[in-house]
Length: 180
Image (cartoon, rainbow, N blue to C red):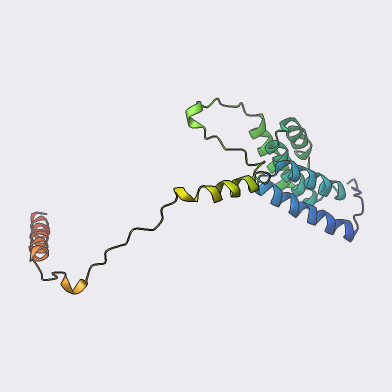
């Protein structure tokens, strides 16, 4: 049985890798895919690739590559990870590879929802607040008043409809039970 030698990873570099991994996941989940790729690549460089944690970081890197539009890099990394020594990592790599190699379906334009680009939103913040301040005249001056009903004036006497409906339901159910 061959002995696999893995590079020794110091506890300091492991902590740095964990921090970068968490930052990469957070960036990915918030839609900042380039930042996620950068953080996950740095975390992966600090880890032994054949460890379980190293494989987990690389699986996240595959999804970040795909989200950032680097599909060929994602496929290449999946092909490497299919031979990973940890079963879970290699299974996930095979599954992702299958998905990445699947043919792209054409969707009709009317099925798509266009997401606006808010990347320049921070630059326009002052313009937006200026516009909001100048357009206050378009807001209504006062909310309409709500008329409250005095419950002591509401007729709460029984109009016998409920009792008639209940009797009809009971007779109908009794007739159905008798019939069967």
